[in-house]
Length: 468
Ligand code: MN
Ligand code: MN
Image (cartoon, rainbow, N blue to C red; front, side):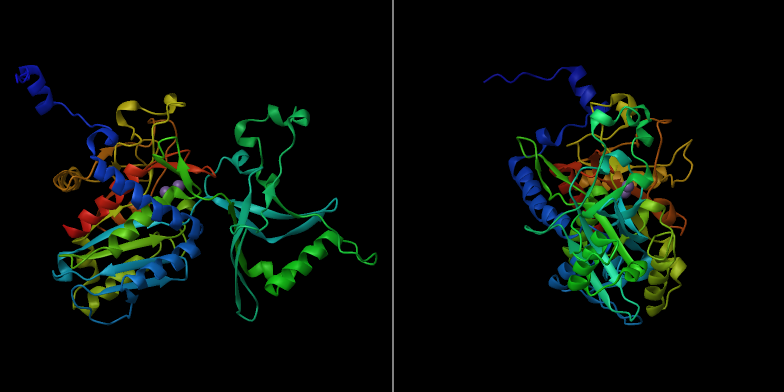
């Protein structure tokens, strides 16, 4: 059989030109099946862990199953020992002690487990024209019009004045009622249609409908509200004032499912950033006797700027590493300076329906693997950490040497807008860090899309980083 010889030009272009390819073409059947299988558990995680508190509970459950124990401050852990530390029920650090001494540095993966949603206000409950509603205050960057006329569930906690905590999770199980923000019918929307898209639905119009039947007693005025409060009192033992010390979050009630005839995509609420949280969690759970001490940090508050004591602009991660370092007789800051981090957060996948918002040569693409983002920010690289060329080169080689399908991508066109991640807060501690995460379509919408191949490759990226 005659084999056609490659021309000089073909050989040169193979050697000299970049040629990233679609994962659907370069991965073998076994790898694609591994990606599909991986995402079955990922979908289950998405359905269980819709808000940060639930993500922490589920992470602890999975960690315990994998032999992790609650962190004991001051305990000198031996190589291979595994622990987890929970910060106020909303953030978690999971670790595996490495064979190398801690002053050689830590390998950290940091993702966030909060997602855009509608939080209830402190005085949420009201009745208007014999309908009962909750006032909400949206959390994170949302296109408000997307959050009307979809089924919503309610998650979170109510802490009574005596300290008793009541967990709320309603609208997820079969047979549960759901809730809904209404919108005006198109027939009567002449004025609304003249508003800009940003103003199409206003913040004070995101009111969640929760009931309509009156309490049958002519002596009381707010009959529907009373009826709802009677139901809530029966179910949770609360009165109206207990909402003041509650954190209740309305999120889309959709379940995660396969999208596309080929089932290549996952559609679900909250994939920014649970797709990186789950993959970074799985990587630490599967981490066996690493050389360096490895940590996965699943943090809260990223979507509102990382401020607050459960966000990475606070000191909790810094304190944790310092405590750990002290146990082994090292200065925390020396351990931090020697450490490396993959800031695990999503990027915007190129959307062919909106090509004008992307710069095609520097946008990540669905199915091209996990995306390494050197910098984010806006207005000329403000508000970001710009990973050094040296660190990018190291991560690039790590991924290439370990068959991680990966790509680079900026967040859209230079002046199109912008965004940030936790990378800058970690970099500001004096650690090398780069954003590595999964491309997402319809980011921050109630229903976000990711590719199964890219998700699996994120897991692989974090796993090889820990194993290196
Ligand atoms: Mn994110
Ligand atoms: Mn986000």
